[in-house]
Picture 1 (cartoon, rainbow, N blue to C red):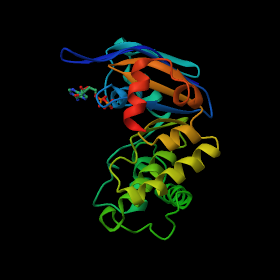
Picture 2: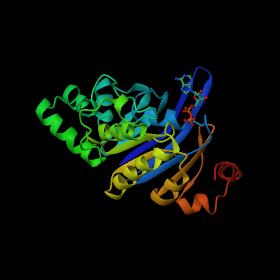
Picture 3: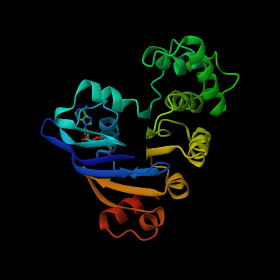
Picture 4: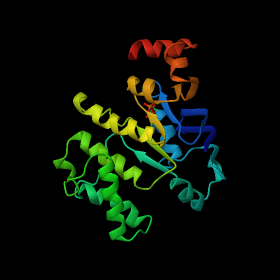
Length: 243
Ligand code: ADP
């Protein structure tokens, strides 16, 4: 469904993505692991066009585009296919939970407000936030704010949801409520590409795990390939440090 071919990205002279290839099928839960600075966030941001890749190809079902000469129209078309869940939630603080989820539908998708609020309520119910529609982010816990962030990504019904370390800003006791929602979405067949350090999630929920270092994929496979039988020394070292 989604394929990234030979993607490159540098910031000034710092090469951050150095020829990464990824293939994601419908229903896949792919976890991206790697040390800090290995390019995981940049990869997600390039897929969502929050960052512009220098070169490479992106294919979403029937639509293929070349990052080097991609057109605005292609970007807006491709952007519709992914949802993004940010590490720090990225909610509007002066808007309620319901408004945060509905606003994108109203402004970018031109959904009529009444319909958008209806869909936003359903998305909030899905992440267990019925009854919190009118709460502002400051009145919600970090876990609840991130659940609003997930509802906001989900409400667009994207083909793939990209999660960028969705639990790393949370206090430990709030992590599980977010992981529970993510597990539920995965179970329902939501296609997900997840950057996380939550190894239990990667082991239990992922069907494919990719280990990246220094802008390249070092090793990839099933959770048991990576966690039980890693082949590469760098993967072994990383897992020893993190588990
Ligand atoms: P990871 O998510 O694996 O920790 P990142 O993709 O966040 O890695 O970062 C990879 C490298 O890219 C880091 O060296 C980081 O400093 C650099 N980088 C990321 N974003 C920017 C930016 N906007 N400007 C300059 N350098 C950046």
